[in-house]
Amino acid sequence: MQIVLALVIGALFGFVLDRIGATNPTVLIRMLSLRSLGLMKAILLAIGVGSILMFGGQMAGLVDVGHMSVKTAYVGVFVGGLLLGAGWALSGFCPGTGVCAAATGRKDALFFILGGLLGAAAYMITYPTVKATGMLDAIAGGKVTLGTVPGAKYDGLMALPGDVLGIVLGLIFVAVAFAVPEAPRGEAVPAPAE
Amino acid sequence: MTLNWKIGGVALGLVFFLAVLLVKPIGVSTQFVILDGIVADVVNPELVTKTDDGYTSTNAYLAKSGGKYAKSVANPLNYSFIFVIAMMVGAFLSAMMRGGNGADENKLPAIHYANFGDTPIKRYAIAFVGGFVVLYGARLAGGCTSGHMMSGMMQTALSGYIFAAGAFAAAVPVAMMMYKKG
Image (cartoon, rainbow over all chains, first blue to last red; front, side, top):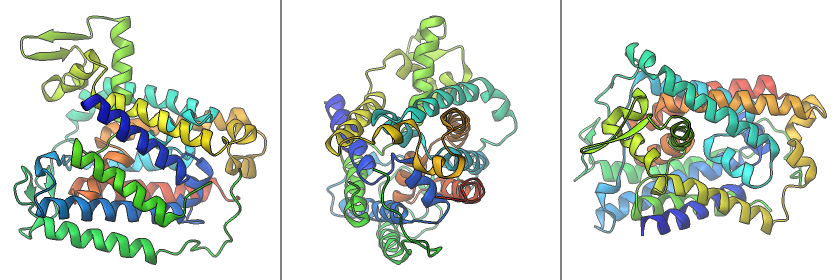
């Protein structure tokens, strides 16, 4: 059953990523250089919609709180984020979109994946050294959510009810998605290259 | 054709919701490690070994957290690995249905052409280096754009916000300096 769900949800995710233009490095780089923020608006809206549905579903008792999976906060999250951001802007791919872009026929995405496999291998080898720096030690409570989600195995950074906060933040993400300008630098959106 | 951001955003949000409703939040970058492990374990079968209560590895990273990565390496037909394969199928179908990217785009994306001309080797080198840095960074951070930024911020995870701050702090200046045209 798990495998069937992996096939269905994975295929839907790949399909949608391609349909919002996320497999196209030109769209990604135009977003990251703040020329054309249509994709940014879609991502912000998606986070908002996902958050509202998940926390709303939890409050209604329809979504299992146990399905949440919160990652640990540590200094390396920020440092790794910086590295990922730099490589993302260089290549126009992130791990998921790179894999999908290769499937759409983009040759450069194959080189991205090859580089990615080596980068991941380099991390596997250097992991003990990285760990020894203390960069992977949990900060601010580690696996925490911003509010305290009822029934979750994670602590809250604040005592506020985490599900209500999640819906409020979800609504803020939706509002920001609408507020962000399509072309903040005033440049016309060029026709897609297809 | 590219979806309008409102429809696309809602569709993407529904996929992330569906994942957490039925199974668990979406994540991708771990699977690069799992594929590395699968390949390395073929070359050196001593890499991942079965123990009384699970799996372990001679590689400290695969062995961490009770050997959960070692377990996935030993059993590639697991949810998260199949998920990434399925993503490729979905993206392939979508691309076929819209008529593909076109030969020019498949060779080299328009933004590269606009900035550096018809230099496919240069583009492949950039993509390779980018891939290396992205995955090293993603593993250091413990997740990528899917797992940390989207799944994480959707769950109001503090780590998701820290990751997004780092990613955009680097991505925006690099994209602006590197790609001035297009």
